[in-house]
Length: 124
Image 1 (tube, rainbow, N blue to C red):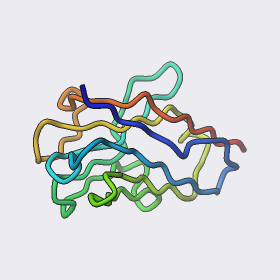
Image 2 (cartoon, rainbow, N blue to C red):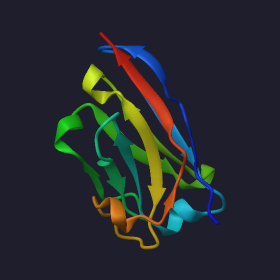
Image 3 (cartoon, rainbow, N blue to C red):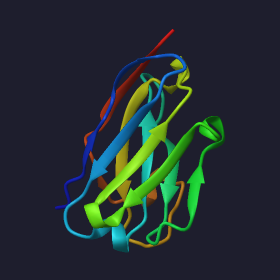
Image 4 (cartoon, helix red, strand yellow):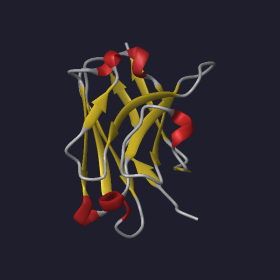
């Protein structure tokens, strides 16, 4: 079983920034696509950003485009989500996920392994 561990969440004021990290065992981020997803209270889980195995193809959902950036450091077995200009609508549990494929996908069901999540709360 693959264990993904997120960190970096917290409470931040609107307009602030946070960087989330996702650690994976071994060299998994070098071989497989991964992504960040979020789930706000009372809402369904939604894609935030994805990255393919090589890191040269990324996707960011429209609502965070220009504010969030996904990246990874395969040598450190870590994926990141840099979030800036946060607003209260970004409040959610953020989870990282890993596919069993090198191609990224915006679909929640295409991801096999999930972390427990890190909570992000944005205050006004």
